[in-house]
Length: 211
Length: 93
Image 1 (cartoon, rainbow over the protein chains, first blue to last red):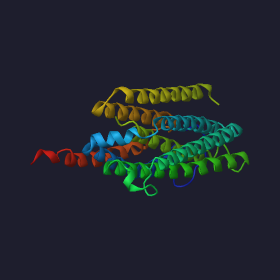
Image 2: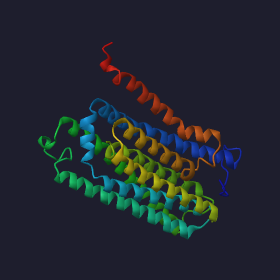
Image 3: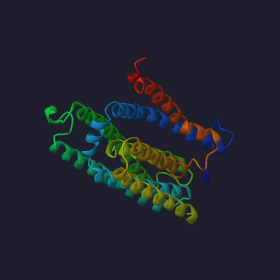
């Protein structure tokens, strides 16, 4: 909390205002935890009730595409963390470059995810568009339904995150977002990006690494 | 720019990548509940690192920290109560 911010009503001081900003975003992210949490619960129940079939379905996932994508997201989070630090110090050019780079990594993630969906479609494993008769068991079908819902919801969040970061890079680059005075905007967008990363940190082992 | 802060963030990234390699490696050796415990445990450690260092919890005071992790408690209640049902259905009570 090093940024030199302007205090607004009704806050007593900058620290209290900062805490209110952060708490608001953490509460929003808590609603996201509950949104994804329901899907995780369904995945855990499926695994508990059908452990062998669940593991067999998980083995057909593309483990290394998923691992590479995890590395891509973790690296993008590092870029965002450094960009936020830079923004608080007023380093506008560095922040612009790093936010642009992180948004680019997000696009790489989505590209690989699309490639993965395509491979699953070719294997007859992608729900909705694949022939249900090609699944080896109803459990695999259910597993793939949950996989598609969870990863598509995550990809939607990531797409929003890419737009946020690209928008930040644009605004900072053009001087429309004054730094470090308005650094809280950057911090809040960073929180969203890191959260989307955290969701993937759980989705990857639960779906791809069940053994 | 504070060089120490950037170095710390890079170290956190190295730790996260190390944990990613560990969780993928463990999936080749561990099976069943041990595999699930290891992969979920590592995911929690990674999430904690991201929340603490990247999501600024290390700089915040009590109340924002409580807000950030409160949902984990509600989720634990949701999953815990659900499992008291599903995990005990075979007991014939």
